[in-house]
Amino acid sequence: MRPSHIHDGAAADDKGPILVTGATGKTGRHVVEHLRRLGADVRAVSRGSAPVRFDWFDESTWPAAVSGARAAYLVDAQNEHAAERMRAFVTFAAERGLTRLVLLSARGWADSGDPGLLATEEALRESCDAWTILRPTWFMQGFTEDDLLRAPVRAGSVRLPAGAGGEPFVDARDIAEVAAAVLTRDGHTGVIHSLSGPRALSIEEAVGTIARVTGRTIGYRSVSPDEYVADLMARDVPEDEARFLARLFTWIREGEDAHLSSGVQDVLGRAPRDFADFAEEAAATGVWAA
Image (cartoon, rainbow, N blue to C red):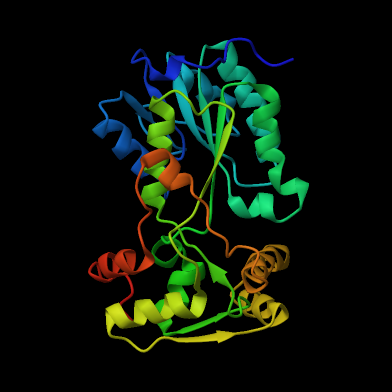
């Protein structure tokens, strides 16, 4: 039975803060920023936040995080226990009156055909009615904030099993702006918004754009999944994690991720940011200096 306390309509009210989990992460910090621009009362939490802390695996942190909140932006536990933790949290939140839950998922999980990758989404949907799910493509910020892509770009040599396949990278700031809109406006309950950038680029094209805006020479070489796994394991990445990452890049190589999604336009009424603009802005910070 789904909790009856979570229902549509109340998130547009201004009573009570909006809880933002993962508030220091790629999207969370921007969600906080956009909500505050809209005049919303925000409770930004993470495992290290103060005075209110939130940890999926420490239920003693849940009461203070949830108390009085009206809605929540949820970035899940990011591991094999994520679905179980989501189900427990939604039940807890329902009992304390949260009225809207927005989950960050990934478009690739749905496109993969692997139902196990959608377990957290299913946990949310089975546990309440007032849910909204955001399914973005790969973040542009992967090139600036994750060593998976940032480190080889800085080194000037990118080796990935992505071939020439395209990926419509999306700016995390666009995801966050969509999240803020969904959290503060009616009409999105029970909706899955798939979010992408305006065009698909191959990794080689993305790296070439970064090379152009930085004035550096940065090479790209497509390698086999096994070669990539070996590269990662040589950097002390566990084999199971390395194989999963290789699988993600293989989806790009096979064209599984190349299609565009209209979620940014549908919610915000404007086109998503382009990778070239993102790269120009990022290059000015020196993040890709050798």
